[in-house]
Image (cartoon, rainbow, N blue to C red; front, side):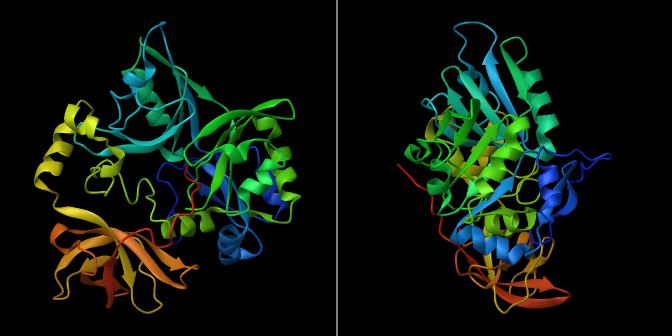
Length: 380
């Protein structure tokens, strides 16, 4: 989500509501359409307060609009992880029990259909996909693996507790969660309900995502909010936090026309999969690996105080157009504007001077490494 919150092109009427809708409205949220849902963009104290609170303490996000599903084999002895590797370039068969992998659904042209999280439990995979793509993703997975694996869509709520106090707070409700490291998950119990706790998130902070039955989601959220260190956080601050962390937003920074190499996501493809080249679009990705790409996703640090938003043209210092901003806004942590976008490959080196066209005026900026704000994940 970049700057002003984008409305998904897939928004439809009537809009769906998450199990926390009542809690949002009673808490003074400003609700907006997003990915077919009514979602909170901010609360009374505003995006800046919510952003800073998450960085300093713990923010609670409702991400129940995301798609959750279980992929299970149709027959005993079928390796469901190997089947999943027919759809993604990530290393799924090498996942150990309870480990999470960030990976990509690719198309035949090497583009990115969606990015997703895959967690392995024995011979079952737990999938979390983006809200705006979930119906297409699930149809694609189910159709491609029909007869060998079954996709069971889960109607569960999903909450994210993010920030430096997240582990201490969640540990008081669900014992043992602090034993998890980044990108690790575990099934736990909360008040006789099965909850899936994953140590991951979309802010760059340490934190967790908690999948739980929809009927207990509001009660669970209210229990966490009884701790003064926890505050509800809307889509606005979720966007500014993920931008500072240098994380992509699907449909903006990555899409079906973007290859993983152009998007600077080579790290999602292990050496084994690069060599086997047996996933959709592998020929294109292999060509990009061997010969380079014409464009590259980069971080941008504008000078001054004016932010460059999505769509702003990027020009070389001689005025030649070389790309466009895909996400941009003001960084509350750095107290300055930041952005990311795609530029011609010969302008992608760190410290390259460029110009961003904002309201018709060229503003100086330079290419920088991301993240803009260091990640604070708890790694093993």
